Image 1 (cartoon, helix red, strand yellow):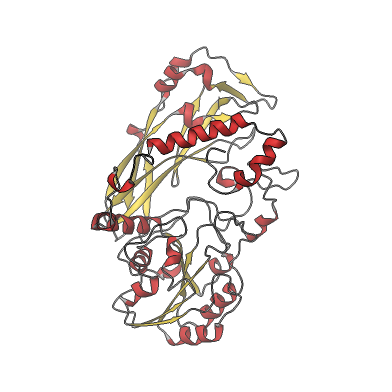
Image 2: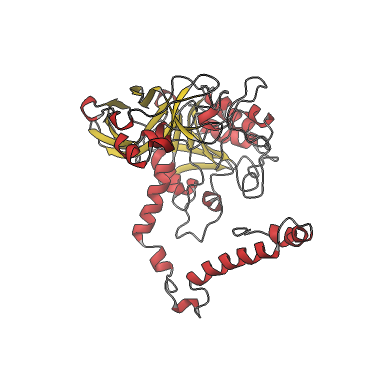
Length: 450
């Protein structure tokens, strides 16, 4: 009730009181909290123009440093999903003509997603690409993301006549926004048919850029050799068009990673109301999120390519298991399945703090391009029984590396925080035995035993 920003409470509040589900005291408490916050914000202190932050205008909002930050955020959020045969980056000197196809190519508002203020600039992907290639030929191909009206014939004609083809497809706010549930995970309407038709007609493997917030099943494009590259840009904001063009032409080395699992179309068979995280093999329930999902994926959580290749390894001198002397004599718990574990609450805050240890990772950019690279630190257990996750992200850092440069990245690992899991009774426990910390292809094993 305290944070409802729609009309739900207005519609259902009175019937809930009449049915005894809530009381007037509940309403009073919510109002007290709401108006306390409004008072703290100074909303009752007279004309807001004369209060703190009341004179912030476009000249301040649109400062160059803020616009640079918007561009950086857009660049860092772009994820390269496929790049067969070095389809990307494109060469500014070799691209004499380019076909820009798709309903999302020339729509500046779509770049903003939702919950946004007026942008300082407005540059669509098409406009940005026109700054790189004079002969840029545009066809929308679809009337909108729903793509129930298409012009595949014209798109095919233009694609067959250009040196290179970039498709800007995906979703819009008609498919994904607050109070709207997606009913399927594929691209809507005739988008897939349009993409495949254009790819078949093009002289070279095409580039597919996806503008959407949630995952889409693009297995068809992933497996199609005539689609050379796939880029996911999300809803990248006011500088998104510029950032996408910079990535396509190699002025920015993509380093983004997927923040969610991309499920196949079949995942919609799982009832939306079934919120269990863990898989249930007995019923065929696949589970949810990268931590517990055991089905097939289109692309996995944390996936993302780069124009550079990076290597990772733990530095033995900087990665040391902690001493267990602080938990000598700690009583172990045995579950019905025979798993032995330790109650984190029984370990205590002081001992937990002493158990923390460093994990030092050596990262090298083995490519010829500078780039920003996210280093992801995962934990896995020997098996996923007793409700354990398959794996779990326990830390990440971003590091900028020049071509051939090496850097060391240090993480602080806390066994009480990172090794623990929730038992069936809700207690946080650490299982006895091996725990594996991984980065890239390298792993470090630590045994936890009192």
